[in-house]
Every structure is written in C-alpha cells, then in structure tokens.
Length: 121
Image 1: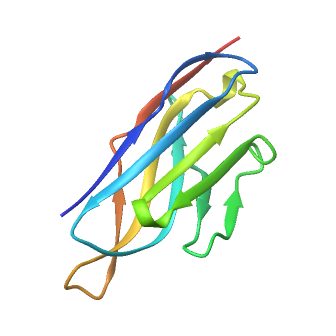
Image 2: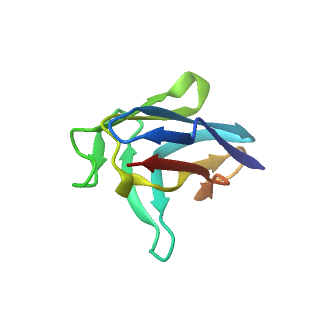
C-alpha cells in the first residue's frame, strides 16, 4: 500500500556532511508526522528528528544544531541534512511516516528499509 524509500547514506569523514532523502509512495491520502530514527549496533532504535505537516520540528539533543529535518509535502518526501558528523552518528537511519491510506480513516506508521551512515574518525 505505502512504501518509503530512503537514499543518501554512505561513508563520510568526521566533520563532513550528508543529506538523506525519503520518498513515500502508494495509496496515500495524507501524511502527518514524518521523521528519522537511527539504530547503532547493539543499541536501541532512537529518534533523530521529526517534522509535522505544518513544519514544526523536534530534534534529539545529540543532533540539535548539526542536523536539519525538512519536508516537501507536494513530493511526499522528507530530508535530513547532517552537518558536522561525528563517529557516534554511525548507524542505520530509518525513515518513518504516519500515513492515512486512501479510503481509510486511521493513521498507520510506515518504515523505510534503512540506509547506512558511517562516519570515520
């Protein structure tokens, strides 16, 4: 019904930058909150940032001031611009969206497949 496809991960040196993208497609009536989560080896998945339809944002304290989340509602796409990357930012980054499917009333949470971000020291 709904697919989230991430792109933009890769290997970067500490202090560098990357931009992740996540495009949602399928039987979408509306998308509410969109966000990025990450999971490092041996750790729980954690929130990085999320953004409401109107643009309100929330960031994890560990990334505030370095990462910027944005969205293009016309393209059903959310972005994560990551600057001043640190080795501790190394993780698989997952996109998440709260989607109301066409013909339905309830909102469902969908996840992307994840994209690897590796920051070398």
